[in-house]
Each structure stands twice: as structure tokens, then as C-alpha cells.
Image (tube, rainbow, N blue to C red; front, side):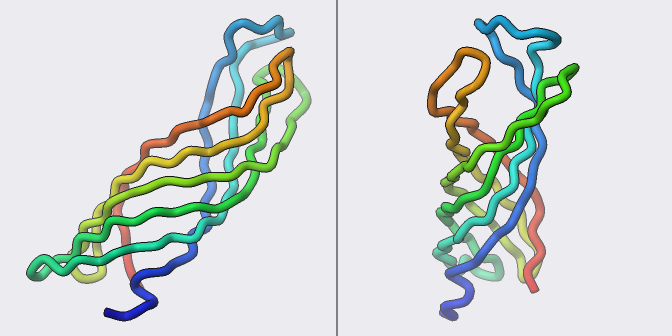
Length: 128
């Protein structure tokens, strides 16, 4: 088994919309969140006939930018992330499903806590 099939690096970005309850906010209580991150991916490919099943774990760092709808300011925080997933591939094409936790400090609008944004993702993969 080739070592490069077991270790990888991933860079990604995402957008989500969220709302905040229990805070006195001017304007709307909805937020756009933009996540930018890079992660180290550790895979364990298992050959299953003509296909490959690859469970994996990942962890990394990046940032989350938060913008309240109807407001003029955007703030950005350092964020760590970790997760696990499963990929099923047929040659160079595959499908994957994973769960990730983005962790950052939410210290605005009367809150001061460590935030966990859980993301469930799925998609197609193409290997080169």
C-alpha cells in the first residue's frame, strides 16, 4: 500500500447561515458564517474487490468570519477543526460522507463561550 494514499492535505471553504437567540441585537439576529480551513487527512484504505473503502480522520486550523445580516461589521476568529468520514471509491471516482466540528471563541453580543459548529457533509470525490 502506498504511503501517499494514506496521508493527504485538504483546503476548503464553506458558507452557512445561523441565528442567535437570547441576545439583545440591533437589526436581524441572523448571521452569515464563512469558514476557511486546511486539514491533515489520515486514511486507511481497505480493498474490497474492485472498490476501496477508506475510513479517515482529519484535523486542522483556519478561521471563521461572521457577518450579522443588516449590520455593517464582520468579525473573524481563529478556528480549529476535526472530524471523521468514510469514502467508497471505484478507481478514481468515489462518494464520501463525513462529520466535522469547527471550534472557535464566540465573544460578541453578550456571549463569551467556545462555539462548536457541527457540519455533516457528503459528496463526490475525484482522485488524481
